[in-house]
Length: 413
Ligand SMILES: Cc1cc2nc3c(=O)[nH]c(=O)nc-3n(C[C@H](O)[C@H](O)[C@H](O)COP(=O)(O)OP(=O)(O)OC[C@H]3O[C@@H](n4cnc5c(N)ncnc54)[C@H](O)[C@@H]3O)c2cc1C
Image 1 (tube, rainbow, N blue to C red):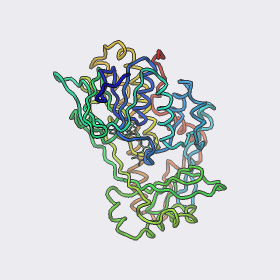
Image 2 (image 1 turned 180 degrees about the vertical axis):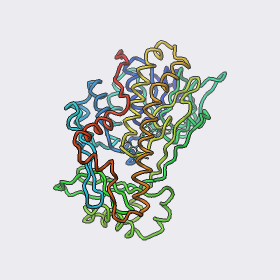
Image 3 (image 1 turned 120 degrees about the horizontal axis):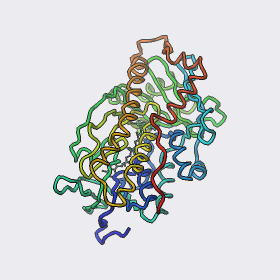
Image 4 (image 1 turned 120 degrees about the vertical axis):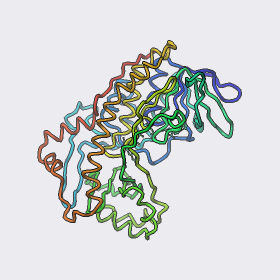
């Protein structure tokens, strides 16, 4: 696709805003189907460390269906085959992926920039694909009550990109859904997350994901040479915590995750080493308006619980490509087609968010209140730990998600 002299493009068949999991997967699938596709991403690269690391079996299966799985797994990753954690002194085991089909019988713990970079590298080989980095959508172009593209800014220049259909994949703080004034239902997230790294002893055998002490919940993601750590705090509690000496924070972390003790002083020396990630859980009442569709977190912001948000965003992208690709190519996409994407993906989003809210309210909030100084393992976790069959069922549900999608969009590029 040739850029005009001012850097904007002629009319494309689909303009995708946001190069996260939803946008990059959708861009890849549409360009593969021969749809003239433009993806706008506001950052210069994918190298940001706040996006989560979990590539679930459902996403691995999509990569397999695209014939990309082997090459994808050449990127650095760790395989997580069982999910467990420490609840005080008791170890719980909640999911066992090893009975899923062998090619995706694990969660690939891969920094998200690797995943996005891989998709971008592949998509750039498709003639109908155009990715503009450092290009931030700032608003919608509307004519006669219909979205006909976006306004954007790149290197200080104001641009316009016209499109038969615009798809907002710009995440939980979506500029486009706000510009479209689509109604958002806030489902409530009582937590935020502090994110930091601590060196990992390569000989460490315990790669449990969750570590819980009274009042404290730490997630430790094995990234080979270091632990990517998340410390869960009550919503809005970051400022009060940051007003205290960093040593107090380190002590709280180590009370739940003693294995971090040897390196935490060196790696979390000041509050500058700790990043705040705010959590939101919400959903649009209607995901579309004429000419515009929202998917991924732009349609339904996900909590980090279960590490499913990336995978749900990818599933939305696959469903959208399945339902829209042929019509986008023919130039016949209408309101009913956009509504069909919402109909297909609303139930998985609702069910997954309901499960996240249940865990948030029944596990995280009681732990964080610190009221249970004995740390009683919740009954459902006890039952799961005792019954391997249930761990396999849980792994299937978590790994494949609700209503898993298959790639049906054509390969024409
Ligand atoms: C603290 C935290 C940890 C998480 N951990 C995990 C995890 O481990 N596993 C998991 O599966 N999920 C996790 N999630 C959820 C997950 O991050 C999201 O559900 C998922 O990233 C959604 O993908 P997306 O493509 O819809 O949006 P995003 O990943 O948010 O991508 C949106 C993209 O759009 C770009 N963008 C935004 N605005 C514009 C604009 N105006 N113009 C151009 N580009 C724009 C952004 O730069 C970004 O690249 C976590 C969430 C939080 C809050």
